[in-house]
Length: 118
Image (cartoon, helix red, strand yellow):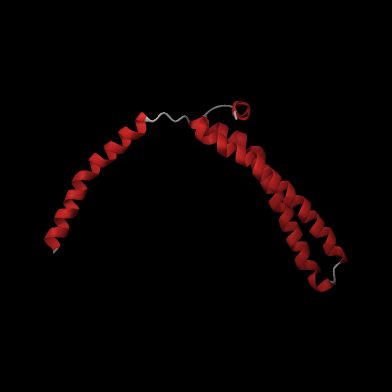
């Protein structure tokens, strides 16, 4: 049984370089630009995360304000949840605003090119 397993293992090891060459040649025949891959990411980040961040900030502010009229037992935890939502919203907006610059670094273009292209 070990002889068969070692033969199969050796066969797989011998065919592995050919399989990698076949996949590399197949990938080089497909023309995919980096901007066609990054553009949907930019649009999703720029719209979705920005709206989610603003929503989190608004709901967190409302929750933080509502905590002041709550009884003392739950006031601290509700204030903590509200503050966490506000901080999460701020981080989301920062990510959404920095996305063009980060994607510009990845594609080695300026951020204005990415935002105007997408």
